[in-house]
Length: 413
Image 1 (cartoon, rainbow, N blue to C red):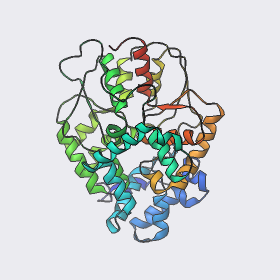
Image 2: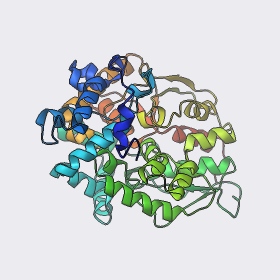
Image 3: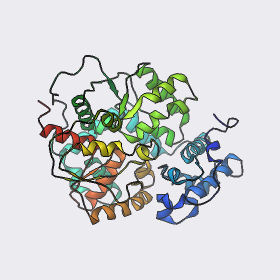
């Protein structure tokens, strides 16, 4: 806690209402409503803290619920306002008075709470394997959801883990993999690519039993105590070693790196957070080793929680530049949110699609062969939008492209 126990609200104190944030806010650009921009929401959050507005105020809830939490306003703020910390404090205050909606609680249970989530992911993978989700993908709420599921499938190869790395890795792990919920349930192929590419670059990856959900979705929903409980389990599970904790989901990485703050400065949590690195950071530090040439036009769209929350900008490009032959570029509006934002697409479907629309339109003006991004929600949102637009563009994590290059180079047996 800071500033006399005010917590995240204190991070808003530097705001001088200059308005530089407005053009960086996807929801303000979509609606044109001051209350749907950072400046207006900060005024609402300050009123909540000071008791001028109550948690039951419908307008307060309406506009705070419509925030993506993308934190795109933070890099452009000349005063250094910590908008994300203030938003989580406000949502925590709201959740203490009224629990999240039934839809939000059901989604959290389905995606993050074993054994329920295990059943849900098993069913989702079985449905995905039929090819039906991709065939019926479209713009309606259910059809868009099917497009999101279709976007989780690895293209061009199976989801299995049978590929063996060439060479014998070190006996002792030099990095530990954070598996997460959605990543493990629907993106295990990205974990496989992560392990293989790190091994080629001399980094043996170990698994950690007992790890749980990172708590990001809970924190964003204002469920502070639930997020803290999950963080304590993960801190204990990963122990006090010095190995990097590798994560390939931008949202998870941002949450894990914030454990020190989340757990009120607990020294174990601070040490844990300092060990967390995005997979592209680890690969960039180690080279990475070049692979075989791939003749592809590749675009990179930065996940908000990698760029704005973790301030990781260059490593994904370093990873992709290790693939000879590709034509690499950022998307035209790479720093703008795609509208995914965890549960946002489920809870605010219309505004989520409105935020996605301009990004999709610019992407289709000069379509790449592969669109890369480092967050599962972004892959699903962008993949569903492209499927609805009937665009044949593969959406993949950067390590998947590097993995394809290494496979083509014969680095795997």
